[in-house]
Image 1 (cartoon, rainbow, N blue to C red):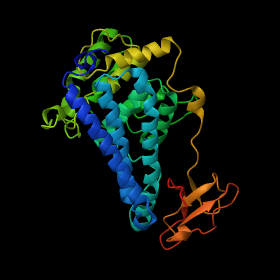
Image 2 (spheres, rainbow, N blue to C red; image 1 turned 45 degrees about the vertical axis):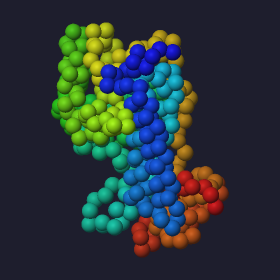
Image 3 (cartoon, rainbow, N blue to C red; image 1 turned 120 degrees about the horizontal axis):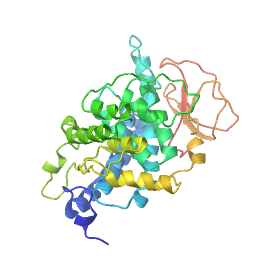
Image 4 (cartoon, rainbow, N blue to C red; image 1 turned 120 degrees about the vertical axis):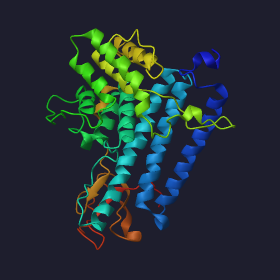
Length: 353
């Protein structure tokens, strides 16, 4: 095996930091899991914190993936790990729904949409994170993950032209969702978006990508990892996982831009090369059959048939009656409303009796 300084993908990563930070990251993931399990207990059930700790779990696992990428872990080993992170992302969306149901019923004087993505594109940190996550799936040719991520971000479609352009490559022909004609965040994303308008001018395209990489970092101030390499503690730990403009790589891959002259630190050049290798070999991280398989329906209304045998819960009914085992083919109790609000049943991750 090559020495660490030859395997690493970014210059700020060194072996002691990578080893110690990886241990810290695994500990952080377990802590979030413990907090989440506690919040899921019937006696302490807290919808707000359930959503919060699920969000943290997703982010910590994605940051661990980036840390391993920056630390030089082989792409063949990293690729199949994305599916588990997408599971956490999808779960964040799912647990956010009962929380928003609670807000809707508590604040009846406000307009609260229930089934929306917890990722707020108006927040540039959230927006950048979503672009990174989607772009990693694109560069791993992970069809199932791409479809699932797009599905969880669906409420953000028609709102941002760069996001809509990236996902348009994976939409069915009969998808008639209108595409946005502007950007939510002008800088630095206009540079990358303009690549799609310069397909007749390859030299202009490559210059736009280079300019994007050059300008990208200064617009990420506020992210947890921003300047993380400057805040490494004495015990060789800190909030640095690598600085990666994965969306620049996804753009070059989708537009088949020759990136041979791009040498910027934040550009994931070997990941783009990996995507192109997978395409040449007609390989994908996930199969088309997996990509087209719909996720199980995990939410149901009062009176509807039960889609999956197991324990279901509703925040609208207190006590044991709000957490019950149902069999496929049964119907959920035909109770439309309580003092809390509309009765909606959710699949319970904790399937213990």
